[in-house]
Image 1 (cartoon, rainbow, N blue to C red):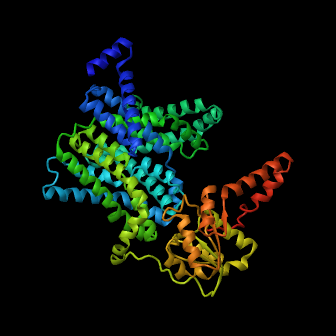
Image 2: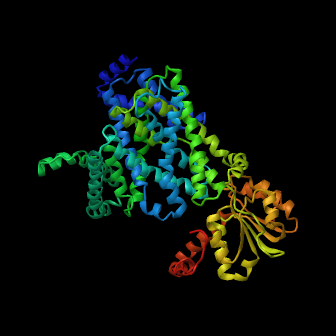
Image 3: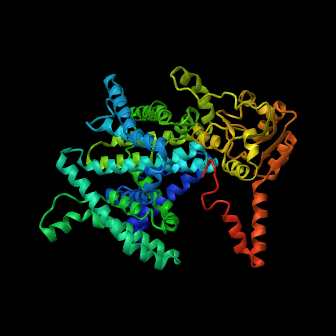
Length: 602
């Protein structure tokens, strides 16, 4: 088979590298179609394509080609990750985000290392987890979650803007920052002396400062010149990436030629790529750069994962599979043993701490990156690398199932959390009112804006308003506006009754069904109608069939935000055509500019 492909490549005049990349893309594409049909993450298809093309089929056997493919994909992958790291947003994330983000990664590394050591002590994995660094790499592998998979699942489930969704994104960014630290220290694990480590960190700092200066001066002006030429933006972005990479790996060479010294400051290609991305992440053009580079992202990410797959030995040992299953289980368990209590202690309520931990189950691509580099550095052998990759695939396959059942997982863990002392906030009565004018179920964006409108136009209504929501972070802001607020899951009838929702004249839920994942809006309308037979029930729908379903379930009125937005858009179009858009803008912006508007959510 390999000879056939090589002959075909020779006859066609294709260089061996081009032929190998073509074969990698063909294999990855065909398997991705099959895996998509089977609802298996396509990353697993790319890895399998690498295994089939490399160790099993030996269609691509040139190690140089494999390294070229993997390194090219690695550089672009890390550049894109760097573009998504906004340090300012992390600092502004508050106590919960900062505390959990700083501690989660190192604590999980320690948990994984100790758990792996424990397995070796009882004789499990002794033939696979060989080498002094094997257990440390196990800790690195399980400490971070997959950005690609988690963000994709949050987008598909329309839960990016939920409490658990925003917390998951914040933790993913912190994990990426921690991965930078690991990549910086990794080359010096063999000789963990202060000198080489300090020199490595100094090189990273030097390259980062130089890159930042260039980015904020010449690069920012250069991008302003080409901002209206998308193709040029893409080329300029890639030029910046590889320029920083080349500068980083040649730091010592430059210092040797100019100053006659070589202090060991050179920076690895992967670290240089991430620095390149991070230094331009805050530029005004960062969003457009990310969009343009994302055009070729899938191509390079595919090559990276196929290249990773090519480095995996054929899993002919059952021990590799057994240890991989154990490592995957260890990764999932760590989310509830380390991440959940840490989120709870740092201020997140236990329900959202559980949901966030469940959604962050899949092992990160960074685990594969770190294992790949560790294999090149000789820290681990191919068996350990294979275990980490297989564990990644297992958690990638299991994560959609866990993600969809996050609320079920919380229901299962709630009694255990009670016994462990992780209590949920009290769901006591909302206030002394015998009857409420308005009961607001959940406080999403629309609900937050509604409270602000009530505060501005009818403040006397707020003391007779009850809000039921499990985001304790915003309870203080809601109370400051003058409304009563209670903690609870409003999809549970007992919570509604205990909060006094049955005493409300109007019951309103502004959260549409595509965000309300713990229960169907149809069933919730039926529950509210049964509990509040005399109340006016108002719910929100995304589609017209959903609206008809809610009316049939007993809703008195159904909001359809897309219709309201379309009416506002038509008003803006009319104003623009009549030359009145400036007046309309002035009237609109007075609602949220000047610091007069108070909302629980930004």
